[in-house]
Amino acid sequence: MSVLTGKKAPSFKAAAVINGEEIVEDFSLDQYLGEKYVVLFFYPKDFTFVCPTELHAFQERLEDLKKLNVEVVAVSTDTEQSHWGWLQMTKDQGGIQGVTYPVVADTNKTISANYDVLAGEFYYDENEELQADGEMVAYRGLFLIDRDGIVRHQVVNDMPLGRSVDETIRMIKALQFFEEKGEVCPANWDEGKEGMKDTHEGVASYLSKN
Image (cartoon, rainbow, N blue to C red):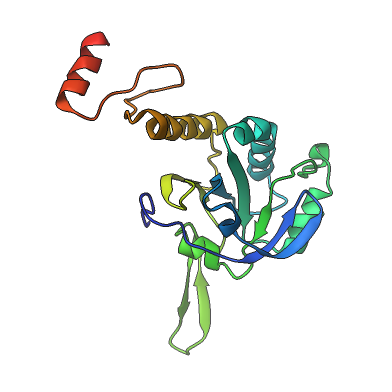
């Protein structure tokens, strides 16, 4: 598994469904460069069980995220037509109707591969025939990308393990606290708590108070 933290987020152009209904062919994160933070998260499949809980959870906190100058983008290896169909289904039917942030179609699996969250591998057998080892879908990867397009936080969960939107927001606030104050965030830091100056004296001062 690659560690992308501290590196430029891989660029891509792909089809996506935006605003819950409109299909665009060349969606890219480049539109946010210099302006917005991005939470880019991958999920395994449309029309499943854990996945809609995550997509709805991010939608429920979307206004909170936008107040932090954050755009949310979801990705799976399904087609844009599959995304569109799922977006037309109500929540009680297992659908994701009401989700308004972009849902990207990584149909050729290159985005998932470049972010190194693709489960399974392609290979050629002894007959030079293309085979797949495992199901070629994305793990539950999440990447916090800053305004310069640099990955500042990443987490990858296995298929059965849903993510915490609260923890994602905590990490965004920690990053923005560091950018604004120039102080680093100790263990279990949360909004309203003190940071630490990145020096021996700063650490000692913080520890003496806590």
